[in-house]
Image (cartoon, rainbow, N blue to C red; front, side, top):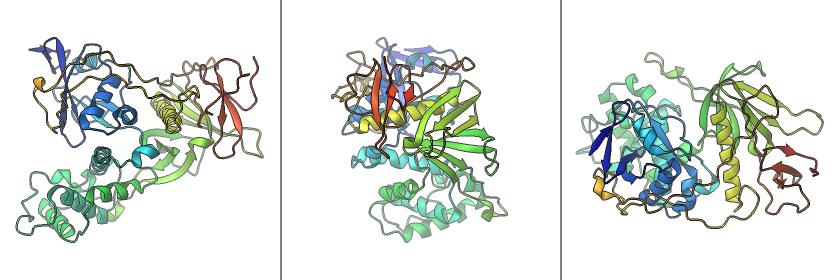
Length: 435
């Protein structure tokens, strides 16, 4: 049975359950049958099971679900508590879809030996290169494409790997900014030469290793404007990753008559998460973060950026701060994490890449318990409607018993100094709070 949503997307229903298909970045698909109240976090946990992660309950916390409303552009991560059925019903484009991908590139995730995690990192690296999100030089185009060929087809076969073999799929191997710089035949010849010279037996790992060597690897990027430093361009990219906040100069695409015009992204400044005292935003206007005071300064440096995505930036920093706590085995309140199995929309365990039949899935048996998420803290300043504030370091495992309610001790991993953070209000203080 099919029902129409608000736009052009048909909503398919089976036995009172809504069919939801979730894509990976390799264009494969998983099919789920969900309840009307199923949340984004429920779907993320289910996808971790269906993809086959070895530790889905924990690994799913580093992943996100995204809308692709026009079938091409991946939107920002959906909130974990949002219900997926109303989102799907709101789509106007018949090509709209959900995409499941890595959100938080934590140290433990990148050190994982789980083949499924490695594969997810690989296809996301490929996507970032092919889409042009991560600019590359001409010399690297053929090398990276050759690793893709090696991973998919094995060793070079001169009898079949020749111009014409990739005619229908060449777009999957050449970064979009570079595609029209050469003819398809020229690209294929260049790719097959590079492929024939490969000797690796681990092309997937080699591809990820090359891309992850960039300082901005894993960053969620935001376009911002700044006025605090005349030496920097006014228009920048602000990146958030496990290292903290990066300020980047965007790369330039190649020109057909001047391939040397192409440049890669350049990191202009980096601010480790452990050095950031707090962050905040004014909805639709700006985002700013405040650094810890320097030894010889009484004022904390504050960096302000004009952007309409302040909340998304603040949310990403908060998510990484919470991920660092999880890496230490701690809850947001400083207590030890216990192993909780978050509920999920159950599937029949079929891990095939393309699952298009609704009866290949099983309905959820219980409501999912949503992972606690850091909530925006109300700003004390009256001029800001909403403000995000979060600790930039890991909380201590056990807070001092004489602290007022909501306060915990936080140890600075660099200096070892103790400061205090209020889980209820988001407030931070170097001086010990009193009742």
